[in-house]
Amino acid sequence: MSEKRILIASLLKPITDTRMFEKLGLSLSKLAETQIHIAGFLAPEPISAPAQVYFHPIFNFRRLSINRYLAQQKYTQLLEQVKPDLVIACTHELLATSQRYCRKHGAKLLYDVQENYTLNLATQQNYPPLLRQLLTYGVSKVEAKTASGVTHFLLAEQSYAQELPFIKGRNFTVIGNKYNPAPDYTLPATPVKLEQQPLRLLYSGTIAELYGIFDAINLAIELHRLDASTTLTIIGYSARQDTLQKLQEQIKGKSYIRLIGGDRLVPHQQILQIIKESNLGLLPYQPHPSTERCIPTKLYEYMAYALPVLVQQNPLWQSITHTNQAGLSIDFKQARPQELLPRIRQQLFYTSGVPQEIFWQSEEEKLLAIVKQALKKAI
Image 1 (cartoon, one colour):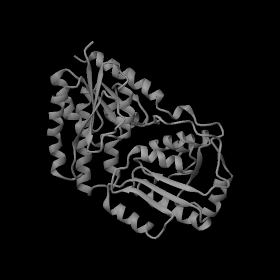
Image 2 (tube, one colour):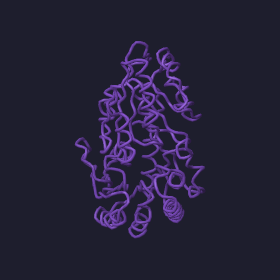
Image 3 (tube, helix red, strand yellow):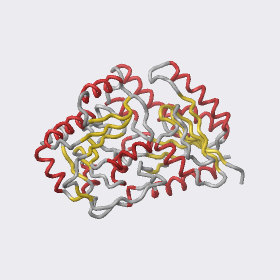
Image 4 (cartoon, helix red, strand yellow):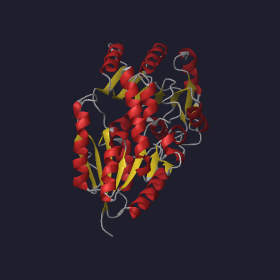
């Protein structure tokens, strides 16, 4: 059997993106006689990647710039250079170009649906109203037009199967963003109780108002007033300069709140290290149509390290935390810190240990079966 090539690509995600590299890439690198190529936004290449994993940091531009559109030319050149037998497009922006290549060369195309892009564009306030409408229309047309050329859809969330019309009648499998353990990972001690410990709060990942960064800061301030040993670590990246400036203003002079990253991407391994050093994770997502049916990736990560969590009230998230005694469900905007603090101190978390269903192994098995079948069909 000749060596097969798989290209995993995203326009905006860095080449070290947790899902593209640590989950899809590392899992597929276990396939015999297979090269894994990962194309994405410029970032330092990981030094511990398997020998058969190759990185192509071909994208580097401002989000709203002409270079973003010229990136398609770079991607086309990469496709012709690598000549993959299977393309996994991790964003709608690479679908049309990927489909043209696959038709020309008899390769197979998988679409890794990481977000409900049309819903996000329509409901989030990231662009001016007219541009928002145009982008929403454009994305929906691209996804619908290319759907027939996609061999299999990988859905990061179960809800996408009902939300996305182009999935109807197509082959799809839910491949959740569960935690793929780092090489040095060991199961943490359980159960967990925070009765006497100083609270070391954590907000990790994308820094955005929608994800509740300012609610996290407000709660940390109130808890610090009640217990001066309370600290908050914010680690992640903010794509919006106005959000970052507001954040920096709010934490100025507060030595018990530290920011790691902010204006730069933070390596995932550094985030995992901070998770291990913290003892209370915050998931203060604001109620919003674009997030209410999605399971945050960091919830899986926090649970893997037996980190107790405070999560915004949401039936889906509450069912997970309640079943596994992983944390408390609260309304971050209405929470009374003087009542919340005793609950945090008295609660016993993870009484049945860390649940196996939060780990990536089950998703890897599904992924490998899909890819093996697709490679068999590739010319």
